[in-house]
Length: 218
Figure: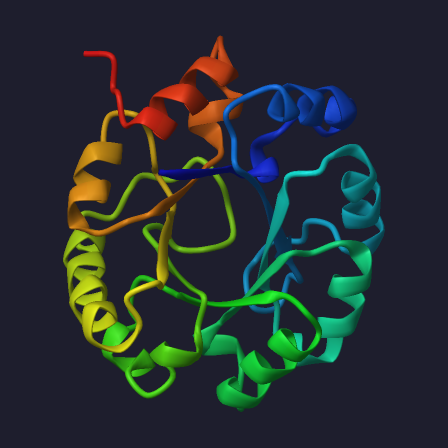
């Protein structure tokens, strides 16, 4: 399991020490949620913060854009240090063009789907993608509960990927914990994003290890 702790739940007053902890943990990627207050009802951070994070880690920076017209900023996110750039299906008018733009900039390209968006909508572009992110909560805020219907979406996507893109990384974000990671893996997930489950824990590194090994410890 590729584990990508979400810095949305980190202590921003001690961000350097939080990243140091992640560097020393079993975390594979750092998941960075970029919100614009338009596409979602929240605002987080942008390129200047990503640039500073890039200086502190060699781990993959998995950047999730919850912004309208993300194609405007592809090159800027690459320059800031993004390795993976995921845009929302619902926020892009010309999705194929945007995906090609991301790849041309030298990043892996992902598309995220809100809970109400069918995975079938990606049928004609699935072969071009490196990653699909299934939102298992409504995007915009951390700490929400997992939406159970997400499991069926993941299973459907896994079936589609088997035919069109066997190497596709299926990622899920929202309500992920060691308690449901096995079920997610069984459904077809290969990467989990975890925020509160990691950063609100007494021992974040231990939680990351449990997610990595899919060991709920129960």
